[in-house]
Length: 81
Image 1 (cartoon, rainbow, N blue to C red):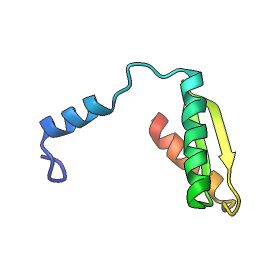
Image 2 (image 1 turned 90 degrees about the horizontal axis):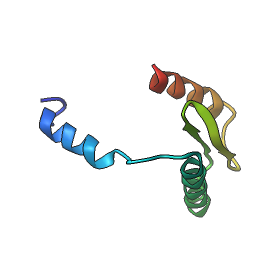
Image 3 (image 1 turned 30 degrees about the vertical axis):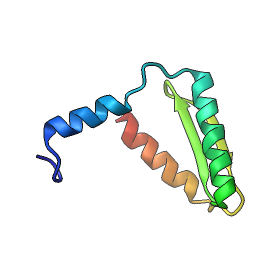
Image 4 (image 1 turned 90 degrees about the vertical axis):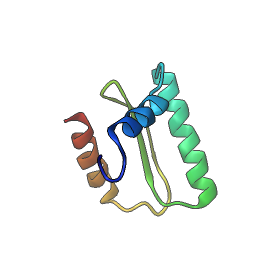
């Protein structure tokens, strides 16, 4: 087990979250949805969505800190690794 979850449970969760497809248009729509929800909640965040290693969507909402760009860059490197 890992963190209280069995390997089988983790596989089932992965399978339930996997998308059958994810196009550039889907990436933009996801970014817009996240932006709309963040605006409604008054969140001061930066949103980025990549598609096949390319930036497909980016929004910087009012109040987002400049170091958010560095944070996103670090997370992107982890994901790509």
